[in-house]
Amino acid sequence: MTDTTTLLVGPFNRVEGDLEVRLEVTDGCVSAAYANSPLFRGFEMILQGKGAMDALTITPRICGICSISQSMAAAHALADLAGATPAPEGAKVAQLLHLVENVSDHLMHFNLFFMPDFARPIYSDRKWFQRAVTRFTALKGGALKRATEARAQLMHIVGLLGGKWPHTLAIQPGGVTYAPTARDKVRIGADLAAFRSYLEEAVFGAPIEAFVELAQIEQLSAWSTGDLALFLSISDDLSLDASGVGAGRYLSFGAYPLPSGPLFQRGVLVDGVAGRLDQRDIVEEIPSSWMLGADAHPLQGMTTPDEDMREDAYSWCKAPRLGGVPYETGALARQAIDGHPLAVALACEGSVRARVVGRLLELARSQIEMERLLASINVHEPFMRHVNLPREGVGVGMVEAARGALGHWIKVENGLISSYQIIAPTTWNFSPRDRHGVPGPLEAALVGAPVRAGEDTPVSVQHIVRSFDPCMVCTVH
Image (tube, rainbow, N blue to C red; front, side):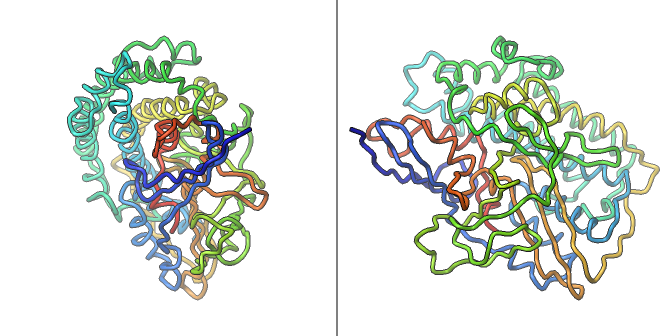
């Protein structure tokens, strides 16, 4: 005879925004999960009736963590609306800004959001516990102090090129507003060199190229230096390689698009097999959402909240689907779709360990790409083109935020925004059930998580949730 109980978990600490998860627990394991984004914000409604260029001011305010990602998506949507492309050197500067923000996000997730869980007393009997306490205790750990210092220096680049962070207006459809000088390149190079030193001393304990060259999980398991090695020891002990396993479907919109193509490729990966991605196959489904209207592609859909909050729904989040099925997105997806062999192997594993290591792999690869991108910038070329926006038309801006695929869809009529729809990474990952009752990626990954008797917030559930690095304030606009 089975014993099923219901457990309501939330709010979660060290998660950006509000999150609530209802768990059905059967015989000590999660048998079903229902993720609720309980805060409706309405940015898509705010944009209606505004001038098209207002999107560059309004959308970055969706989030104080990934505001450059929102700026990039808005700028690309407006450029698409105009049938224009940014100045090549301006595109490089914009992508450097975007890389710095995403790298900073990965760094904070590992050090401030994810790893402090292992310094909790519940793990006091583990052989790695004292090392975790020394490195990752909230407000006291040595890793946290060093990481915040390294991040602060890296963000000097955003101050120089973007004027401020968050909510910079430096990124425009035609390029960027600031043209860096040769002296600026030297200063940025010094900041990148300092950040490389930090990564190699603290995070990896070795040259980042040595980590990037890993091709197999067996090679990863043998890594013995830096905070990465501590995480791998914890993962082995807690079997995080078998925790939070997803459905094996991943998508990426392609990260850091340049005239020569994106630095990290666009596409899908299903059970280790790569494929093409067509944004026309995206549909936002609403049967489990407190929304009115019908399932639709973002260019045909609207955001109309159901103020009565009907009983057969349980989240303000819509359920985006590609070709009718849910997809996971994030750093692991990006790196696997780009074809990195270790990432492909980890994507097939699809676990908590896989997501965390995928993020660290991207941290290392992004450092190399930032250095290459800086070296390629020609300070003698223009960084901005004039772009005329039409009074009628549609545009699509698709980029990769730290947490995954971010899309902006704009429709303009009589010179004003008539519709502006946004699908954020956490909208994909924390989506509710769709029309066929299929759970979203987090909901599916939570099934099988162990729940101890008397646990109000099961640690296994927290590890799985944080492995996705949710940004709930971006989820519902």
